[in-house]
Image (cartoon, rainbow, N blue to C red):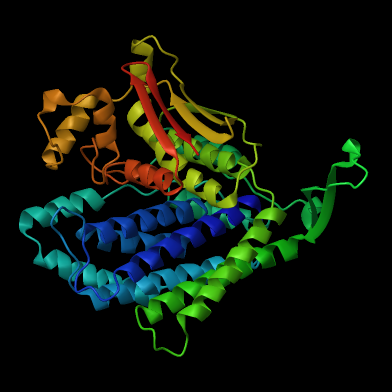
Length: 469
């Protein structure tokens, strides 16, 4: 399993877990409000983007169908009232995703199909749309319509599979602006990396520092390095065991609810939770993690958007080798996708505009990973047009989210409005913008990990977003 696939499995596992916990927290309710709907929407939105990038078409299509259903319920006063039916569909979605990612984690292929579940979700969606007013239904259709997405990454494809996947990819690409022959050649040369697991990764060596206090007071021998050898298969087994155990815990929590008289007691559940915590600790000690696969993922995002939006953009990455915990890396990766998408879609101007402004026709996005005072620092800086504060205020006003007169908002407070769910400055939704979920995901992931988010921008010069953990 290559690093990108491994990261996809780990990130998906965490997202699926959070979605299950979200349903668990609302168990017994006769309706679901916006807090639950938005949490589920964030998860599905991210899973859709990641599975699409990795060319897992069944997971991507199911996520797209589920997102369309959830979009029906997004809105200030909207609620899910058919809770039992809704739960059945969401749990079916979670089960399918877990089943497919388990196959990947065990070295197999994500080859399952969810045709029946897709049809059930579509039927529910169509029934809800039929209840909408004509104006509401028209707005819904406008928001969910989007062009087909360009895909670049082929996860662990064999040389024999590459021609077939390339041909499939070419059939899903939007109409090219340049000649079809040149477009196809450029995509095949630049946009379809084939990732193979290096032979050297059969066995990995990890080290753990341990302070050893010597009786003779010998300072030179105070620190002794213990070395461990773990095979690739064993590493994957530890990771998969942690995922499986966590799912057992989540399912038991969901089934038990507040019932203390079941055959499985709370005390037993707590023991399982402790086992998971110990196993997770061992996994973190044995498995080395850095930002290298995250950097690779962001390069794919930039290449894809540059091609699709016809904006030449260059990504510069520094510091991707610094160590990081897997859970934190997953949250940062998810946030970075939305930050970089916003930078290119909203920030970077087209080549003609940039040349007119005296800028280089090629946009620049700088991604930097570093440590500062013992904290991990991640920053994304673009040289685009900067943040349009007037558009943000207008969007927030239209959503009735302002709590005071427009002229009383400071620049910092306006940037804070960007982080609210549903806020978008895009008139028509496309593959990358317009659903008002991107900055919401960023804010959610940063706060969930106890981090801090800082936004700074200068009109005409660009924007910098910094996360510290």
